[in-house]
Image (cartoon, rainbow, N blue to C red; front, side, top):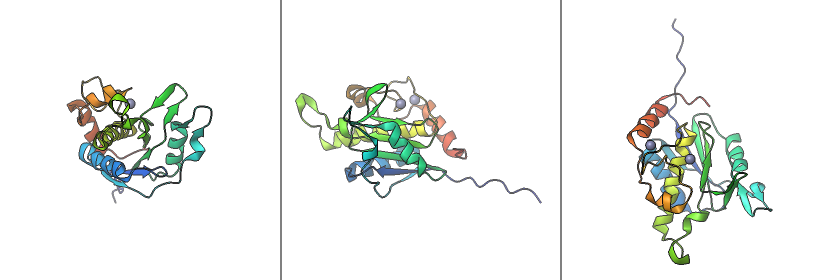
Length: 190
Ligand SMILES: [Zn+2]
Ligand SMILES: [Zn+2]
């Protein structure tokens, strides 16, 4: 008898609100993961407030600690993307909009700095949601194994500030889109 081939499950994405997080923003992020990365995607039950990741000296939350938390509860074949209102940092960065484990199936994104508008005002909600969708799609791309891209406007281009983020299109360049469809088709090994 031929050996049964391993069952290949489609990769899915879960958007995990980390504590109290704007629900519309989470829903918009999940919808964009579905539309742009072609993954089935849903917002799942919120996790408790991530106080364990708070760094009092910096007044920020540690992105790496949040990813560890998400990784511990990740079923195989599922990409878990945490969304938080807290400001995120890493030891080497004063802040990050988001962060992911390359090919590791987990990512986090923060709304905190995405509300910043012009002249000290808040950004319109629609702009903040759009920005979060971009950050979430970028980080989910990393979580699937994609690296940074130099193509102007591509969502996998590095954006260290809002001006660059706002210039990105809601779009993956053909090379990144090709990579994404290859990764979606592969069994998710991590
Ligand atoms: Zn990146
Ligand atoms: Zn690209």
